[in-house]
Length: 118
Image (cartoon, rainbow, N blue to C red; front, side, top):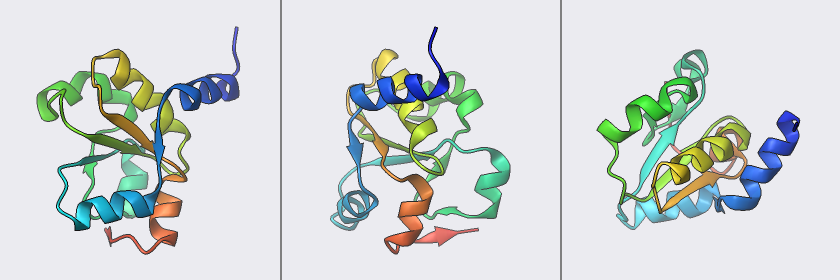
């Protein structure tokens, strides 16, 4: 058996992490990238990264295939980077080859000056 922290650590060991600045720079250069926010709906409603799409963690597996091609570059974000690491690992298991987790999550997105919508 594993604790939640052990599962998160395992996911982070297997999934690349990118910084908010790296994602912002890639988007500014026009690089194709799908930014998915996996937080809860109430968190999203309070504010979210302006370029992000919302697919809650609880429905990610059932909705992602119809919305995001498997060959897309995908970056997942949550509040701090833990849920997104778990979600990214799941997408890897589903065959998404170019997936990463946003280190520091929405908190770092805001702190680095990323655009926010409400």
